[in-house]
Length: 526
Image (tube, rainbow, N blue to C red):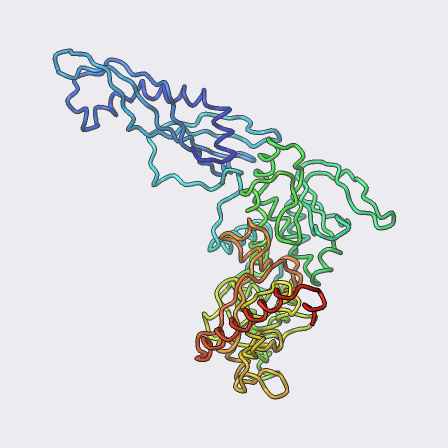
């Protein structure tokens, strides 16, 4: 049976009723089903049928909107049918068993505060995999694929901000929350500003940080409340409050059932605490439940920057910017991104990330922030950066993520750290004054090392890594993201690369051998 909480819960609580429904069905229909099997076509009659093992294989679950907080779920079973039949045609009765029957037993229920309520049997029939698919996982978090994020955002807006789908009316997060029946309050949630928002589903006493006393004090918070920490948002990037509110609204829109079901196993869960690292700060949460945070991170910008309106606005801003500074994208691109951020009420980084997700790869070379400054805009060949790769790295990140091979390239002078890319040391790419040449700035894929970055959370290293690593929510600058250098690949178009690599490795081995041979600290330092 599939290993998930809902399957385990249903198996524990409903096995007896499932067995009852299967037995009733088999008494009515099993003889007909067995006769239709080619192996038993010769049988003249079946005397009786017995079901001892219901054989639950998995449970599939959907939202059921006709009931408030409703779900529909089906239990997939493969019962073993024991029967006696006339095998010879002369009333020579023998026993046999049949296991070729697959059934789905369907139920309706409501997800209450303490588990399933009003569970109702809704029918049983033969199982057809082609017409059966999950919409909720084992923690009752919706299954939503990456390519469905924009459609989910559109469905959300149709319900809570239909005026924002066309024309120039921006999404008002406060109005959306009001229409959803949610209250917004502002508190300092954590002293270290690690939690930017809370979605409170059940009345609870929640500790908040008090700056005056430098201590935490508990406050009773009503259900259906969004708590935002403006200091946590602004410490990372200005103007991210709008995405924070929509992010929390999406938790109520998508994950209320998941929270209620989680409380069956742990009554401490009353809210979703959203960390600035892109994960949740809830006790004993399972991995499936963490997908709720990834979904809110990914869909919130689609709500605030609807695809069609955003692309239309992009074209308008490009025309305006080109009039001001010319037709070079490295010149007008940053102006366009900043204008889009202001127009849609989001961070500069969120606007840039939205462009990248919509296929505008060149945006990745605009407004890169490292070592306390914006990096000079650059361009690269389409497709030369894969998801999770970058040319830009801060010096501190380069040092902290010490890569012996990369530093070997520095030792023999093959590469230099110039304007935050690591660039091949050639007059074609680096000027005498130590800046990138114009050619290098628009052909960075030919001369710069590509770094692959990942979140330090093992969970987010999976298929949704891009949404965790490049979270829209609070990171206006890359320095504030949690990531580490894990590998580097040199450009393939440099013929001297094999020689440079060999010289670097030889030099490192020699240096290391000399170092470890010294016995005293003074000798090693010298």
